[in-house]
Length: 260
Image (cartoon, rainbow, N blue to C red; front, side):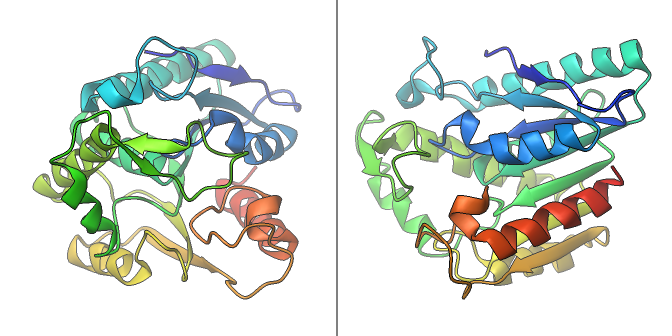
């Protein structure tokens, strides 16, 4: 279990605490652009480093669902203590890909501990494309065997993602579906690039309809914008990865959505 990093609000008193979680094989620091924007606008930030994504003893090849659930529960305990101490009003959440999925898993199964007022899900991994499921063809391999990462080097922890990490990801997805998205109809902004290589916009819309997630809204980025420094559409976490126009629009939408 990794202790979360605390980034204090630059405005006092703080208006909220925002828990943030990175994606699979993505450096936790990749979310600092959004985190810094939130602190500048009045929210404390609790930045999680999922087990296996930092200089810890737990390797991604040996990861379990319980490891990542524990990381999130620890962040919620930490955030609750902040609210009690500073009389903050709200807990928000921002998660990218696996981070979004893991949070949904925790909200579903531990509602007495994990519950937030609003959440922003960036390319949430609960709606993988059919082609993403082809990764399961590698599940017969040794858990330490790796699948090459498509993310730019500056964002990724390792050049390859161990098969075991993908097994846990799909296990989390199934765990949420088994509970029929229980406890998850809270105000949510799901952000997608329609050209995302791994997550399906159509599948996400189907999930919202099937499980009557009436408080979920989808915000779609402009896939055609020039100025993106990466051709990888799944990566939507900062100005460099999504382009200046998308970035400026997104952070203003987050600000309005969170009322900070």
